Length: 197
Image (tube, rainbow, N blue to C red):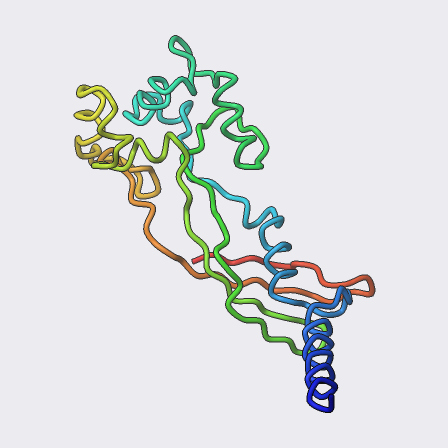
């Protein structure tokens, strides 16, 4: 009987300690709370996109048209193209087709000092259907017609700005790192900056 009582006390103590660690206290900045705030921050909600009004002859436009995200005759998003923005939980941008969006992997650590905190996190680009089709040798790329594949594989013109999506396909890379700054106010924590590297 004594062992059962000791075991119950130990179990209750462990449960109480876990409950304290997951409190909804607005003054406590947990990793979960930080992750939710970073994800909803407009500074983190970014995309890789193709601006079809600026780059009308870009071969990636052919992919977007072939997949039904752009009108076949004029540079206008189709309803399917607008839905692509909505599926990424972003506001529709009428002059661009998104190919990938930033996705938070995890908050890896938080350091606090008074009313300020910094959270380190990892993230990566998550390609949508258009983005996957632009990755050379992916199944989606191989499903494209041969003439579109050939145009994607062509090297970009020498005058292509460094920030443009290269014609030779896209490499979304692996896990990236970021830092977010928080400030504690009377009603809880708020994101002040998000930096992604």
